[in-house]
Length: 329
Image 1 (spheres, one colour):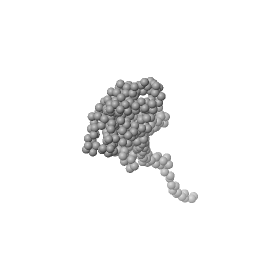
Image 2 (cartoon, one colour; image 1 turned 90 degrees about the vertical axis):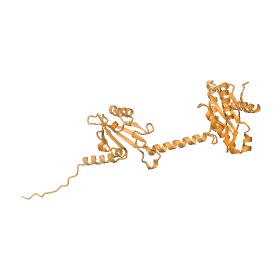
Image 3 (cartoon, rainbow, N blue to C red; image 1 turned 90 degrees about the horizontal axis):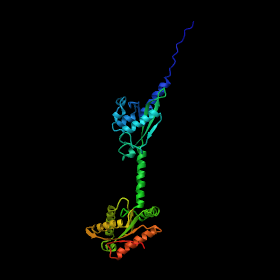
Image 4 (cartoon, rainbow, N blue to C red; image 1 turned 120 degrees about the vertical axis):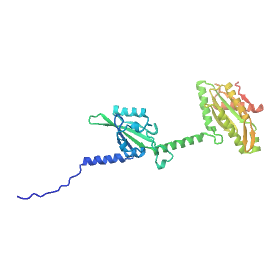
C-alpha cells in the first residue's frame, strides 16, 4: 500500500470579503463627505472627508445624533428632506445656488482663497434593507467651491460690464443710450395705460464761464456734485441720466406736472444752496429747469424730449435759475 503524499494547496482569500474591504477604503477616502444615518438621525458611518473638515473623529460621530453634532444645521429644512427620503424611497437634492452650504466647513481650496466657507451640493440617497424598506439615508456632501466661486465671479464681472455699458463715467448717472431706452419704455407704458408721467430736464447756468475761468477740471467737479445731489433728491422709481455736457434728464413715473414742479423746485433750491469746492475755490451754481407732462397727443418720445427742452430754454430766456412747465396747446 503506497503512502499518501501530503500536498499543501494555497487558499485564496475570500473575494467577497476582500471586495468589501476595498469598498470601505474607497468610501473612507473618497473626496466627498459621506454620512450614513438611521431614522433617529444617528450617525452610522462617517468618512475621512467629514472627519477632516469637521474635526469630529469617526469614533465620536458614530452613534451620535447628527443635529446634536451640528446645532447650526437648518434642522427644520433638513429633517423634512430626510423624512421625505425615508417615506418616498427617492433621492433628494440641494445645490449651492439654493443653499450655499449645509455644513459650515472652512474652504481650503488653493484656487479659491477668497471663499471663506465651502460651497456644497448635497444628495440624500435612500438605502433599503432586505425587506425593501428604507432603513438608512446616505448624505453625500460635494465640495463645489471652485465651481461656485468661478460662477459668482463671472456673474459679478458681467454685472459690472452691464453697469458700465449703461453708466456715464463722469457722473455715475445713466448714459444717453440707457436713459433714452427707459424713456421709450415709459412713453409706451403711458400710451398703453393712460397713466400720468412727467419728464424733467435741467442745464447748469453759465457753465462755459466755469470752464473758461476755472478750467475743465472744475467744470467736471461741478457736474459730479450736481449729479450726486440729483441722486439724493430723486425717488427710487425715478430715472436720471446725463443728456450731454452740462444737461441732465429725469423721468418721473406716475407724476403729474404739479407734482413734478414741487420736485423741480426742491431740486433747484438745493442745487443753488450747494457750494462746490473746486481745489479750494468755492463755487455756487444755479440751474434752469424744464418740465413736460406726457400727453396723448405726443407721437414719439423724441417729441416729448423736444417739449421739455423747449421749456428748459424758456427758463434760460426768462433769466435762468427757475423752472418752466411746458404748456400743451
